[in-house]
Image (cartoon, rainbow, N blue to C red):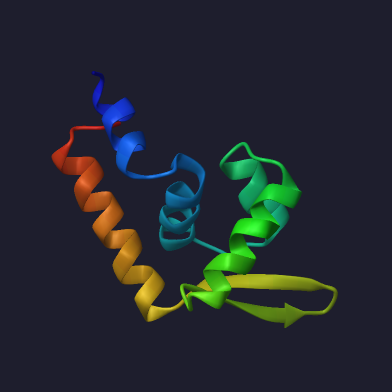
Length: 92
């Protein structure tokens, strides 16, 4: 089994990559920009983000009409763990 496939056995790809992308972001991240970044629909991204907010992994900050996404400390730790697992599996 290819390493990327085994990673996806343990993690759903899009939600895991959302956390990692937020952690690696250099500037402001919004749901629409995150959707483009991970190649996912906006509505799917928003649904996942709402669940992540309930689990205290991310927070939304109103910026006019837009909501800026930020990782919480808990979300950042989980993103780090996901990256460590990917590295141990030698995934790209």
